[in-house]
Length: 455
Image (cartoon, rainbow, N blue to C red; front, side, top):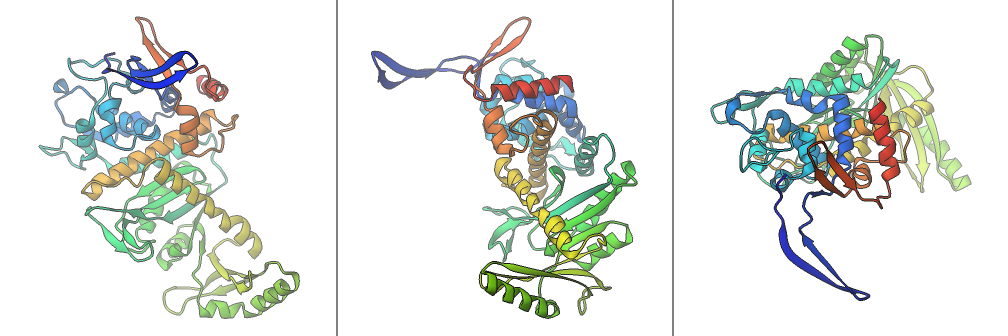
């Protein structure tokens, strides 16, 4: 495999009687040898091939060097390994790990690398729903959206009795003049307002939206699509939808009630709601002042808004006094089993874990790298980053459950397991990655490999 090396030498002073020098002439060396585990996990899940199947390639196949599967895999693997920009692939296209992951050690044409550079990848990201003369690669958004749910369903050997779908919106700050860019008063910036749906660690949806809408806009269609796909495979599984007060909208709650989906949402407080728990707040205040510790009471009642709700619903109130002031909180739910304290503290408050998943997508996997001009291209970028999350989560689920990285974040898994230096030797019979002998996580690597090899 050809490499571009520089013979320039860098001096770093002596150690004892020996000079310390460095140069970029080591040949085929990679810093991402741990990505071989990603490739093994992908072969088990079939993620990259199925994602590539969501694209239609109208290019003349006899004139191209890199297939759509190679391009899609490059993008997903690259993001998982920490390379958020397609410009990085002008160097990565000659990296031996990327070549092995693509299943293509050499290019078919002279002056080509085994995998693609930034210009070819840019044409992939600018693909549209329908191929045109100048955009010959097209993608099917519905097929990509369905793939997230399919991978989630396949991760379970038997249908669970109950699942909780967490739904949330977040900000994706913008620093240019992208299509769909609006100023959001709450986040105090120009941004997109993507919608995420998780079930535990599983990512089921990542929908890019403009910021000039309500947080719950479009959620009925999104949840209806996901619930329908789940019920086709698991008709008897109970589905519970969970979200903050931004989703306590009559349209979404009404759809859930009509379609047999339970929900538990936060409910924004107001003077009427606070008036309903005045006695409980007084009791909590008295107890807190006596003990010097926070105190809380719970009350369960039926309630309706004056105009926006079409019916009365069960509301649970937390009347809390802490740090010398009141802190009332409210939730609305269709759940009937369990007292108010349990539903609030054990069921509703657990939704906070979803925010950690969103942070991993945005910080570790660059889901907020939406700097292209059109929303369609930025949505595709969001999907690539989200698929990288699905792949790493699949690796964790399949290979790391018996290791210290079983509950690690995507960034931690990358740093400790994927970023392993290796000398690459290519012979007639094999490609050998001689990984660093002093790698502190080689035992974890071995455990992960055994799990993937025997699964």
